[in-house]
Length: 498
Image 1 (cartoon, rainbow, N blue to C red):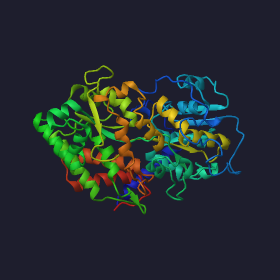
Image 2: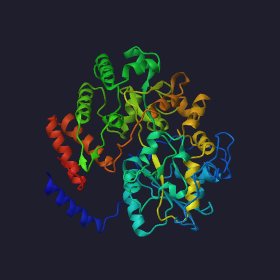
Image 3: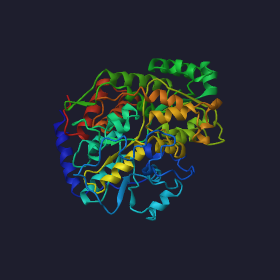
Image 4: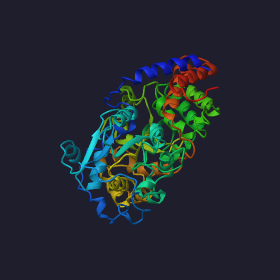
């Protein structure tokens, strides 16, 4: 099926490959580049150098050999002139370098730009996260010096499954034991699907929740607490019923959910079949169930028809035409704060958050080591500082701030009711500890055996087909599936499609 399209697409791809270079611009769609805009400006005291083994607050430090599984393998390059960290933007890497080297979080980006951090270079590709994969390909082809680089979940396996591009962390003397406090789903994403080896780790857990206007929830649904709201929206059937109640009460002028895109971010995390298995596209009951749920919400006005990342998306929160948003950890200080009108805005301080209909994550970034690194020891130290050292991760959680990928650290921060950012915390009614709700969700996420290297493309093609054919076009489910299959066939020429 779709043989002609595959052939034409292959010809076009080969023709373009000889000359094409994907340029990068401002990110409007990557979670990692959008979400921390409102939180990354916080000043902090200089953090202790993780390499000095400070363990004052977080237990055993992991930056030396103590608690690790060994030393860097003799086959890994050493002695390079510069340790180079590469990423698509400057939201995270400079501050992780600051944490590692004990530098000032506020000043480190400028210091790196001016070459003022001895032996360390930050390669900022200044592009969207989704464009980074092709940018890396070009730089690897050009022989650019890179030691550690950042990858996103949707395309991480492109590099994690390629032993010519990424090192198993065992080559750096590391194993699961060095990241024992990491949330399990982050480890699954960081493992090679071909060898099962751990090759990438994340310093952040991008857990999500359903954030809603508490005053509107009381007015239209009669709920007064996040626990009562969770009872109303705890699964998709309940969420749809609550959306109908709100829609009926407001003559369709107030939506329970923000966008179709936001809904899809959540719903997709409930999938129990990989999108590609045995090299075949998998279309199961989940696909139709999502489409029907989305159509019911779309038609009743239970979710807005705004495009994600548009001005209307956040404006609807300020205007009160959107009652709630699906938000991940990075979004609370980004688009969600904008949806409240900013600090002191019309809707600021009126929100609460609950787990919502489905445990989900949205976004997140993984650290991987270039197989051709010439700085193996520095790779080990940097990765451990970012994702394996309790003390350093606690410093980062508070000073960045960040929901870090460390259960012990987050449990401690939550139990102490630590306010990591007053502007973000002030947006929640009655001083709700929003981290506590996210922590409840993150431990329920299970992606064991579900991550494939094709996920970004397949998920985008699926939601596009559902929106354009099933929701907006009024087409049949068969027509929608045909559009989906055709698009996947054009974009991925190496898998079978029935």
